[in-house]
Length: 129
Image 1: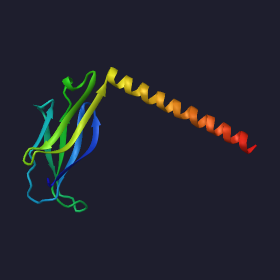
Image 2 (image 1 turned 90 degrees about the horizontal axis):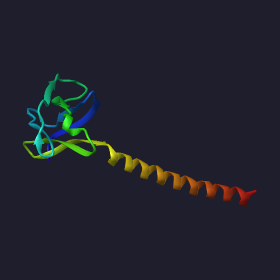
Image 3 (image 1 turned 180 degrees about the vertical axis):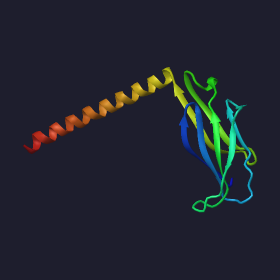
């Protein structure tokens, strides 16, 4: 089990950012980021000054999302601790036709459920009137 925990803080202007914390003092993170098993360039891990409210070492992890990750289908960027080979977090991008089909199916399911509820409510109103 890894002593590191990575929590997403924001995803803005093509950069994913998170706070990496460690439960073990003196830990130096070896964060690796891959897209389709290819390491990504430009990943930064910057230490944050000690905070009395949050004990233990902390770092800001900043990942620039490359252009090849944006396109039709589902792309997953994996963020892991290279020392223990443990996945710390992931970034999933869904775009294009794959997304359209999923949303259309979900809306159709919601419409069917709403129609069922409307029929049940009308039946209830007729029976109790």
